[in-house]
Length: 107
Image (cartoon, rainbow, N blue to C red; front, side, top):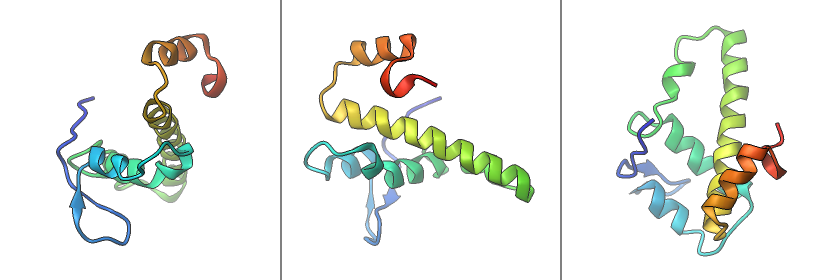
């Protein structure tokens, strides 16, 4: 997976384009992971971002429901990671938590 920061997103009701780092920096202070969910999801679905929309294209209703739930779980995990990084949590500590399946990484 290649992290492509330079793509543009339409931010909320605002019709101007912004990069993912710019959108995340507009929060001005650390927030709960749910605050980042919408912008992270838009990035991950965008063709020049995560391009995960291709997983949902041409899926039947049952498959699309499963993939949408899986995508939302993934978006939630990425939002937790961004929230923790923006809060200044140590990256090595986060990696240890992931490896040892602690806190948000239990399942």
